[in-house]
Length: 347
Image 1: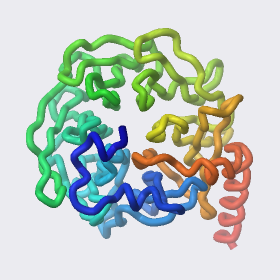
Image 2: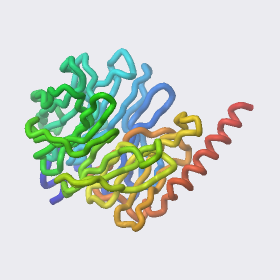
Image 3: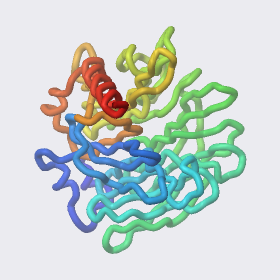
Image 4: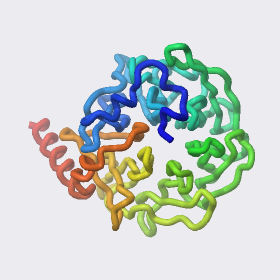
């Protein structure tokens, strides 16, 4: 079953036809620029091909992009219209028209949007309840041209812990999330109506879950054994011991996201210097068919910090992805470029 068969956000221009064209940019990420951050479109070699959102005169940050199942929209968290870059509401951009629309307008902080598989709802984390972070569900209605409008809001969690970073299952029946309390973060599963909540992992610092397209596995970020960085891990949605997805000693991985066919996991990887200071956050990709699994580095010719990543609901160009350098090698080249640029600016 293809995305166009099961989701109703294909009214108007057929964006999937555009996204499957050779050379299309099928990856969206947030890119730091000056005091703000914008959403950009990136190809499988790591090159930025276009800006999806614009930098505003009043610096704002656009973060946590999530492509709708039908490809028409990208939801994201943004400080647009807020008093501080650390205050976020939910927004959406129409991929066909590039029109940006605000979905939530509350004094609370809204973050981490995740689409239901039918494209009719978005779950997200918010402080709007007044007692920490909880998960809410925003239902949507569509206009005759495919435009979106809020159609109802429901609170899904109200537990003593903070609940954040929801991820909707491919069958629409469950939501994975992070429960945080006392410095411990673990993964939980709950029914999409907020019931049946139960622990999936025990922590201590598990975060940013994402589902495999077949609904069998959940990939997430968690500490590497005997190191300070985070790696990508995987656990059966039915429960069981977690296993390493890929072991990387160089960067700290976060924000995993599957390609629509389940073949590739995209993520970010943050490299820190010996003092622990962040140097460069880059996109990485892991082809799950490879043995052993390795991280490819998706570096732009002009390296810059990228935060969060999601792939369009069409298959990625695996041939182009295969040509990307290994993360360690690409990082060395990127750091050399940044060093040369810094030396030139100091002259």
